Length: 316
Image (tube, rainbow, N blue to C red):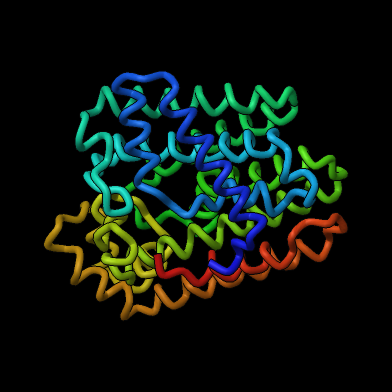
């Protein structure tokens, strides 16, 4: 990924090492399950946003590494909890904690990761930073509840879908950017612009992810096609297709079974919904890029622009 310039690689390495230490420190089954989640990998885009939205001198500070760890630990916790709710056997091609250890262990692991995240961020001594991440976590919970409420409803409006995405994905992206800005001592105007940038980036990322679930390569994404369709999650391509194809609408409303996946996704693609969702992702990417024009601080604009491109034009 071209956005990971050498300075961000060094930052990411420090975050990774610290994450391993934090997860292993408590020992026991929860630590082993946390390490399992950590080993499943991921792009670590949220910690990278902390680095890219910081000034060069701030990237050397331990406080920024702690913030990067905190946002990634929160993200990991939400994934573990999502896997419990979805009864998901795989995450990024690896067995989930729910699958290998059961619901009680997975629930405890997610709770532990949340706790470790806030303990780590508290070490920065910045109560405002802790409040910022706490607000993002509240948004994550609200987004999850909204997703459950919308499940299986093909009549969900696009605006309602986007509200959910802003809460579930955009909020943590925005928090990561604002933490980088705050811990660098940037002014309120730049911090707010970077927060808006990251929220739009998160929306682009989420819509592109929804597209991959309908028209991606499972060998690249690490998960089978149609996961959203099977668990009732009404993604943007499914909602757009449901307006155009009565059969897609009926499958969503009654609840899909495995035999529905490939024929229904073929109809989703044929309806033009996947192409239109890709255009929506590009629109959010353009909104994110425009927000960078209002940032005067010495943040890594080249890397942030690369992040926009990658988030909206994903293959994995």
